Image (cartoon, rainbow over all chains, first blue to last red; front, top):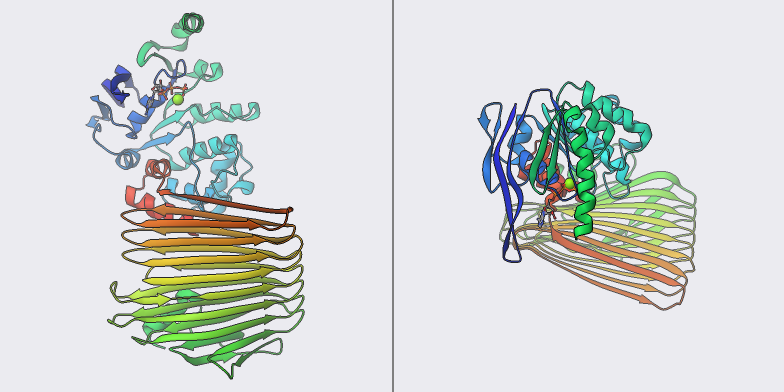
Length: 237
Length: 306
Ligand SMILES: Nc1ncnc2c1ncn2[C@@H]1O[C@H](COP(=O)(O)OP(=O)(O)OP(=O)(O)O)[C@@H](O)[C@H]1O
Ligand SMILES: [Mg+2]
């Protein structure tokens, strides 16, 4: 479904080039649940944004269902079936939850069908539907609305950046259900063992590179080791 | 009324035509077009100058009053004095506004001086919409002056919008707020092309526990120019909050000048202003939902000005 070929992403900081992503290649299959994990700053969000077209890679290419989409902008990718849930959801002024659900699904929803999306992510729908998506909402509420939009958009390829962050334990099951029962392709960035365990494949990133990729069973021991390495890195600094 | 005048009327007052019933006063090109009154609200023409007195008796609840103004005669500059007398214990909605149409090379406009005398224990919502239509280069000028005096334990909510087409505007609101009373002003402005608008709020918080909240949302596009001035005086134990939020694009300019003067140690006055270009994060989010960049911008702006 999605082929990522030799993606590099460089920025210039204080006159010096800095490589954020270093030659990333991947192959995501239809209906697969892939979890990307790895230490803070390893480049996970950057990679996700490149997949969605929010950032453009310095080199490399992205092929979606046989079509080269490297040069396509966010809108075009969204129209092709990409959906994206941000690590830090943005807020608006004067735009309600219902407005965003309508925009995401591309039609005017009845209140009950709009509420459906919210209920699925564990929000008591009627309390939220008319609220503005502004900074009065809590971090966890915003994260869930972000996921409700993903459902409303009903895309074929869903990219979620740390969807579990700030979401309470009670809603965790709903989250697991979402990734396993929607019958869509999911690329999910997560640090949560419970999500990593249910993935078809796990990608471990480290310093802008793919450190390891494979089924949970295969990468499990590596993950543990990586945590130890991290501690050593820490001591080196 | 012709097609254009009907459109103006609908835009500013949501009325499709001259109403069959209710309390209203429709003014067109400086003349009275239609008026409706009842036993609770009277409207009388002034004798000494052009304008009307709107008199709401005491204890009138749940009433709405429409007083739209239309200027469609090219080159006509209308000036009118409207005085509102709101009796104690009344709860009413007033819908005012002015629509100007101009295709000519002459300045066409309206200058409305509205004075509110609000009694005690009142709840008043005042909605005012200003629009200009016609040729881009034709001058449409609207200079509203609002004078407000609020008694005790009352609340006035004023929503004023000027969304496009008005080429030049000077808006001055002056208010005196009494004991335990609350003034809320929400202003939305959109300027385009070479439009110029200057908006000034002078609010005196006179009574104990008086409150004012000014929320100004503005969008300035192209080569337009906006000047926001607020001047809030706290003369007793009171609370004042002024918020000026602006979105800029093209070569537009927005200036925000706050002045808050606390004349009492128990006065709390706050001014917040933020001006900047449209948020990239907001735009990107909407694009991930399938909107184009332009659609995203339009959605953000119309929400912001809502
Ligand atoms: N615009 C930028 N300017 C400078 N550095 C940047 C920029 N964008 C990303 N980086 C750096 O790139 C690296 C990767 O960032 P990224 O956000 O992709 O990490 P991440 O793996 O998602 O981390 P986390 O787990 O904390 O979310 C970090 O070191 C970050 O500081
Ligand atoms: Mg991240």
